Image (tube, rainbow, N blue to C red; front, top):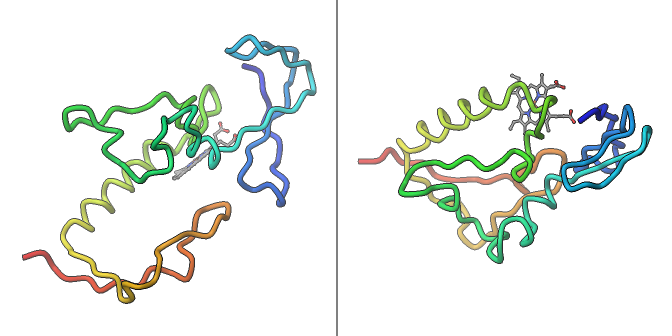
Length: 141
Ligand code: HEM
């Protein structure tokens, strides 16, 4: 698809906008004209029941596993790294980093410093922990 990257406005950091370099037809048949803008919002897409089912907002990482084996989703569905010819070039590198970090974290057990405080995030370009996430770390026996 011939879409050019357009700079996101600072007001809409969670959106990723493109403008059509030429007339085109999207995979669902929707026609775009040269110069038309198309924007998607990965944050919202990651929470849509239409895409992920009724439990879309539940933290259920095992949704990515089948018989214990990781099943990647279509990048057009899990659009955090975008999809198509302009997909993030660092995607595999980012996955590798996440796996290394997850493996290192498994050496420890964690306990929240304040168990009464709700662990939640701030909605920004990247999702920061609101007020940080202070934990005690103990080596696993
Ligand atoms: C969790 C981590 C990351 C996320 C969520 C992410 C997400 C994205 C997204 C959405 C785009 C497309 C932007 C657009 O054209 O609209 C992109 C492009 C790109 N990313 Fe990443 N990225 C991540 C990590 C990285 C890393 C670690 C590298 C490099 C080592 C990297 C290198 C690039 C490059 C070079 C492009 C431009 C590709 C192109 O325009 O052809 N990214 N990334």
